[in-house]
Length: 438
Image (tube, rainbow, N blue to C red; front, side, top):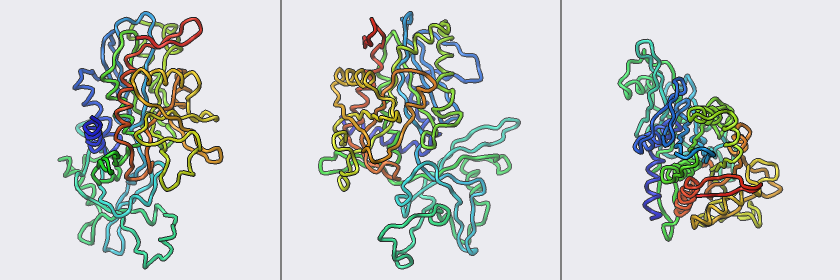
């Protein structure tokens, strides 16, 4: 059970080398379940019982399934993100070194662990913008072979390397692309050949390096999984599975996956944009509801903000809080922070604990050490736009933001079951208290 689901998830991750590919993969899954694509530029026709999805920038996606008894409805929202720390190719990407090597000029995207990118097979994927007649169209591309590599500097040339060094991304982290036999302009030619397009039709691109190392299941009892970008595609995959399995007639179920969380969410397609608010309001209007109905629905709605959490590190247990620390394969993590970097509060924690009890899923609690500054996620950004009750959750993992991360084989299953229970439920307010109803 756990292994089969994990293998499905690892294949999902393998097919998602960039946020664009992840959203395309999610689209295919939704369409196989009968979801209809809506476009923001077109008029929407939404009906009770209908299933729809919409994308923005080809890197963020929101899907929704409307119930059939919506006289007193609410939104059930599960939000995750599609991006992860990588290296992005600059516009003029090729650098010649002494007329012998050709490198690719890159810059870091998000807070990565640079050392984990050395000496492993990498490739390039992303999107290319081609001009076709008078239209500019998006084509996804993945050079599906070992293509480039970032070589380490030998310890003989830097005797301090074994004691730890600070890497300069402009000097140390540039991937090797070819030798003196490869001329400048070769990358563009290769991309166009891959797409079957004329070089003169190439007008723009968003291209990234990605780790080619195969995902794996390992450990004495095969209890661990390792893969690129488990953060946050593990949560995206599990929430999607629960979303497609769950249904209740009195809610509008919403699955959201946003780009640019790793850089602050402040883009047109990020959690800090109007994307979620726009979609919910258009759904509300399409269902024949008014502004008052929308505000009432939002006040009773509930959101799972799903983004992975730090497990206790076996070499450094002192880095985590004494009593609010979590372990792989021991359940979903509820994250809290006194400074509101996470959305969890007493109400949302109580509601989520109840859901997990009903689903038979274990729950753990995480807080940062009080003398360390931790990260944040998209929950508090989203609730600044749409004021819903929300809980920040995640799955425990090691080596977050590494090129190859590790998590537990059981935890994906736990989140799928909790998400299914969540989407099976209707949230409402009765006599000043919150209720979860079937």
